Image 1 (tube, rainbow, N blue to C red):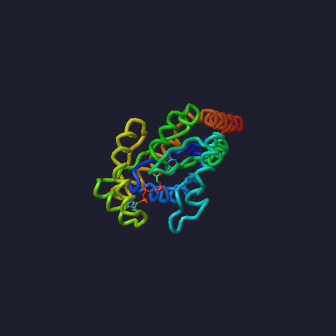
Image 2: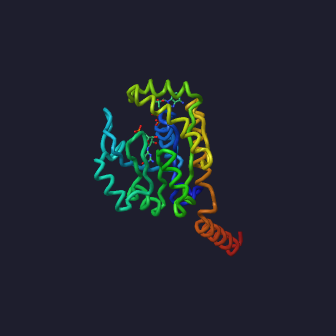
Image 3: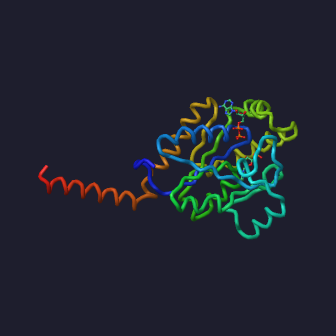
Length: 227
Ligand code: ADP
Ligand code: 5GP
C-alpha cells in the first residue's frame, strides 16, 4: 500500500441497474488501481439463483439452495441481503468483516436495497462509500442487456422495469453517481471516487499522527546532527 493511502479497510459499494456496466467498471478499476497500490478484494455474494453458462461457483457467486441461504440468514451470517429479481442475494460477514479489520479494501456489486442496509449500519457506514452507476439512457440500458446476451427476453423486461425504481429509491443515499457513457471516462470517475476516499484523513487519524511524529523525529535528528 502506498503511504499516500490511509491503512484502514474501506468498503466500496457499487450499485445500479442490471446492464449499467457495474461488472465491467469494477473489473477495469481493480486492474488499474493495483499498480498504484490500491488492491480491491471483490466480495463474492451468495445467491439462490442458478449459475449461468460460464459462471463458476465461488468466483461469480456462491450458488446455494434456498434452505442453506435461509439458514445463513437465521444465523445472522449476512451483513445485508435482499430479494432481487425474485431470488435471494446476500453479502456474508465472512467475505467482508475480517478483511476490513485487517486493513484490506473490499468492493461489492449489490443492489440498492443492500446498499441501503449498509448505509444504515452504524459500524459499517463510516467505513464505506456508496457509488451508483447510471446508464446514459434507457435505450442504452436495453441495448447493453441485449448485447450482453446473458438474459432471456423476460429477464430483460424485469430488469428494465426495475431499473427505474432502483434509480428512484437509491438517489437519496448515494455518495456519488457516475454515468457510464464512455467506459474510459466512467472508469476514471470511479477511480477518482475510490482514491479520494482512500486519502480521507478522518478515518485514519492514528496513522497520520504516527507519520507526523516520525517526520518530527527525522527533523529533530537532522538538526541534532547540525544540518
Ligand atoms: P452490470 O454488471 O451492471 O449488469 P455489465 O458490466 O455486465 O453490467 O455490462 C452490461 C453490458 O454492457 C456488457 O456487455 C458490457 O460489455 C457493456 N458495457 C459496459 N459499459 C459500457 C459502456 N460504457 N459502453 C458500452 N457498453 C458497455
Ligand atoms: P445478477 O443475477 O444479474 O448477477 O445480479 C442481479 C442483481 O443482484 C445485480 O443488481 C447485483 O448488483 C445484485 N446483487 C448481487 N449480489 C448481491 C448481494 O450480495 N446483495 C444484494 N443486495 N444484491 C446483490
